Amino acid sequence: MRPDEWHVTEDLDGFLAQAGDFLHSRPALHTVPLTVTEALRTRGANAYGAEAAPVFGWLERAGEVRAAFFRTPPRRLYLTPLTPEEADTLAAHLAGIGRPLPGVSADHDTATAFAEAWQRHTGATPTLHERERLYRLGTLTPPEPLPEGRGRTAREQDREQLILWHREFVADIGGTPAADNSSWADTRIAHGRVRFWETPDGTPVSMAGMTPMVAGQIRVAPVYTPAHLRGRGYAGAATVEVSRAALAAGAEEVLLFADLANPTSNGLYQRIGYRPGADFAVYDF
Image (cartoon, rainbow, N blue to C red; front, top):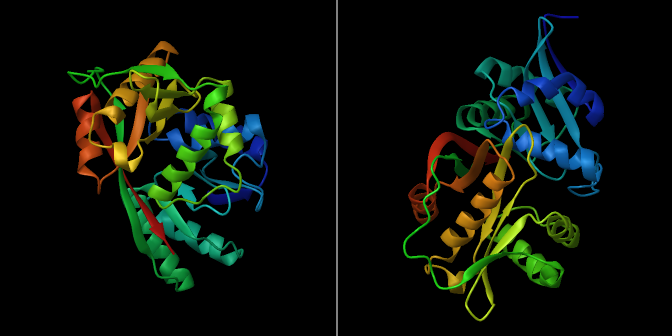
């Protein structure tokens, strides 16, 4: 085996056998590949759609895994941190084996290096889609005063509400819409992984979800309030509710991502106890 080699596979079990320990070594930084591969492992290869099989890969150097990636078509490539040289060799490898890509998501430096390398090797022009910040919960500090109402776990009778709000959330962030949002809602209802904030009359006004716990970390996602209900403190209340639920579940790390173009949400998360971690970038090709 060469001392520095990229491996590409559609075999999830094989990928986790090779790269699982590496992903678990930095649970916060690797939160996305950990939660995505867990969903694929428990819900099957079509967990994120049936357009094409998910693709995985890892960088091996002198018998040690140094980086990893995955892609769930039609979504973008997701990378763990790479040096510019590693990003270039991966771009060359994927271009060479005919793996077209719609974009890339990674920590800021890695995403930028890969986008530039992909342009060199394919001629595709990268466009910055979004800059995000990964936050880690310190001491949870509920806002005072909380808006009137209460938090509660989403139930079966909330299914249509969850389906609608998830569709609106994906549209808001410019994401890839799922052909069927029902499985997203059903999974979260079954495992109690969405909290609502509701008004005193029982009307849901905001939701916050959370991922399953993997390697001691849970990520808060998504947080959504319909546009006409924003600015009233509902998102903060819902985020506090789901953060409490994550801590109660035993999470050692509670994480969330925020769009850096939205100062309101970034300020809110910091006020309730989330502390800035790594910055990420998303490019379209």
